[in-house]
Length: 304
Image (cartoon, rainbow, N blue to C red; front, side, top):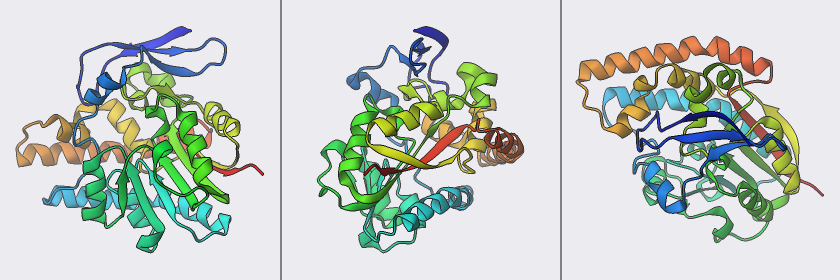
């Protein structure tokens, strides 16, 4: 392997330990080195790692913005569900607070979330009215072939063995079902420009940094065929660039770090970050048009 860059936790400052980002000379897969042990990595995920909206005006506006930009994902998922021709339940793996499933506007009996965090599952139930369970997908208590669609948004890059999750999804999907996955794209222009400062690396929580061919190859290996690709996410690409450029302004990072801010300072930082996100849209659209967007989203179906 060869070293591409090195860095530490720029976003949440959970550790000062320095990690390497390395690339295999043979297969070109990029990953974190050394990998944190399971006991170690749990300390890199703060208790409020998912987003739980507060009650003040700024938080309500932020939640409205999140729902607006999430329409990009919702349309992609709805089309995948429509193309499958099935009317069974939808499983969102790594559901967090359950906002995606809520925005799909399906009957409650057709949606279920799954997350490692008990608190995240609780937020999904209480805030968004989404049934959610806590656990890992390979051990989830669901019947084989019972889901029409399974989604994994920003999950695979956190796993020690992503193939196990993809294979578990194939076992749970109806033979005509669809799988939708999204990860940061290590072949994006942002990584080339900013190196270890690129937010998509998210050291030390991202164990594998996928390029489009890596992700497509993984799906093929696990018995899927890719039917659709998307290189732009209105929710993730502009915000990812904004956070890369000004990590200290990221609202989620500030919330998790517990920074003390006056209402005026909080409003100024939120406004500046939002302006930076808007200013990032043209560049992120351009890189996505060149198939080098900051994220890659794939729709796949089981091979016959």
